Image (cartoon, rainbow over all chains, first blue to last red; front, side, top):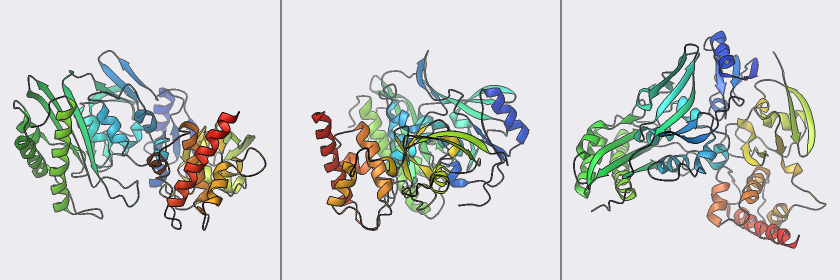
Length: 292
Length: 162
């Protein structure tokens, strides 16, 4: 255990105001805690105050107007079991969560935790990115909402300032002829190994032509990224095997992985091609467009 | 340092405690409550030797601060037996020689009991998935899995017999 993780205070705040006040007061030396499963592994040494969010009612998955809203403190296990998310294309989120860490960890870990920890390999990120999710952040200056694509800034760094915290993830309702899928490559030596590469795709069809495409990649850049050039390859066409392979190879070119303990640049680039091709195939299948 | 006052129900008993902000549930169970059945293996969430039940769900106590579970019901291996004699999971582990060094065993059994609470008739795949956070260096998992499947059948019979 890291001897330096010694917060002086643990406060179960009763409302958002108390939370932002504490975060401001401690100026970067306070951290919010929900599940704690990333915080207690990283055990950062400068933390003086833990702001526990469990009384803020941030654990929910509900339909409201044109969207599905997920509270930032929702346990991953609840996401995995959610009937609301268990349909096209939102099922891609369940697919990602079910491969994230382990069932035991998912009983405590939260949606907000995975996203705000901002590992480039965060499994929820590509799945939510292809669904064009929006993030609601609360801070001393009030509430703001931003697209998930703008949320990640660098390795383990988001746009969240010292007194900000994530409160909700919103998934806009999409048209019916849309399918999305997630793929993760990991070593299975221990079941909680993080992604070597992960990827998600979403395809929307009108009249057998792709009207909208999203491709998102994880663990191959400083943050999760959209493979925009790969998306451009797909739009306006019928999606046959040749096109899927072309888009996958363009996505591989767009990726910017590094060599690390899990894999090499070359292997990761190759695997981007494989995972994107599989995700595109499955996405097409899920909107009933049988892949040729 | 400001201590945190918490109330836990541990194995059915009410406990009022004053803990440090940074004290894990594992440390509180072992060092303050002297319930040493729950083990520290890695201290970082990978081995599962510290698995307990919190409000019925399997949780890694090394990755949970005691302050986080204020007000909740904790079940450790010591609290598993309800009657005299071993719990069917414990019986099955012994019968199937699923215990060698025994270090992973409490965590494995707590993960198993959490599974059987909501999946009384699990498939082998479901069992393996439920114990995927429990590492064992001795048995190769085969016998623990068989033990859990047998225990599930014993528990189902007991349920029907009521």
